[in-house]
Amino acid sequence: MPDPHPPDWRNRISHLVVVDTRTGAVGRYLRTDDQQAVLQPLTGGQEWTAPADLVRPATPSEVAAALAGPE
Image 1 (spheres, one colour):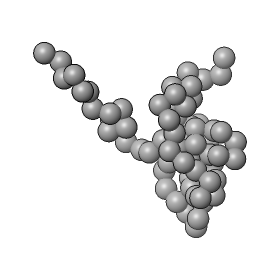
Image 2 (cartoon, rainbow, N blue to C red):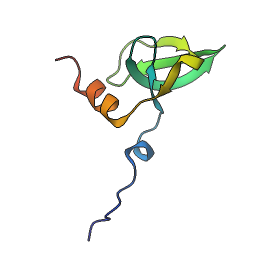
Image 3 (cartoon, rainbow, N blue to C red):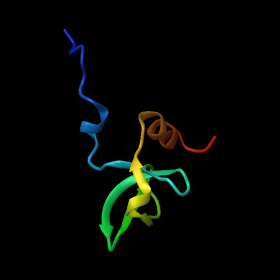
Image 4 (tube, rainbow, N blue to C red):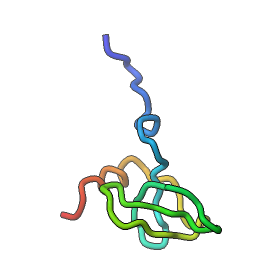
């Protein structure tokens, strides 16, 4: 019988997924360099930085939208 309470999706990813609150961009948190969070798009691509105090954990719906890509 399947587990009625599957593990949270956050336990299955290798990096914290965050939102750059300046732009709404969603990315994997890679590291912090001198008060700057280094992020990468969930689907790969160019890394960017954001002030570490201006990122927050992404919600499941934000992660889903970022993985879906542009419409």
